[in-house]
Image (tube, rainbow, N blue to C red; front, side):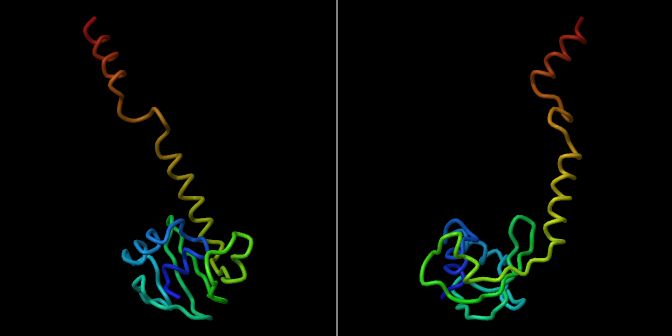
Length: 121
C-alpha cells in the first residue's frame, strides 16, 4: 500500500491529498529517509511524521484493506511517540499565550482614532 493511502487509512490525515502534500514537503520519513507519496510500505517499518510541531513515531503492524474506524486504528499501527514530544507541544502552546495577550501590542484603528482625538484636545 502507498504511504499516503496508509496515513489516510489510519486517520492521521483527513484527506489523502493532505497526506500527499506532507510527503512532498518532507514531513514523512520511513526508516529515517524522506519518501515520496508513492512509496510502498510493509509490516514492521517505522514511520516518522512531523505534524503540528510534533514528531510522531509509528510502527506498521498490518496493512488495512481500506479506511478504518477510529476504534480499529490500533490494530494497524503502534504509536511509539515519546511523551516528551507532547510535553514540548504543551509548553510551546503556553509560551504563545504568555508572549502576547489579546488586545496588547499595536493599537487597532479604533484605538488609533481615540488616541488622535485625545491628542487634538
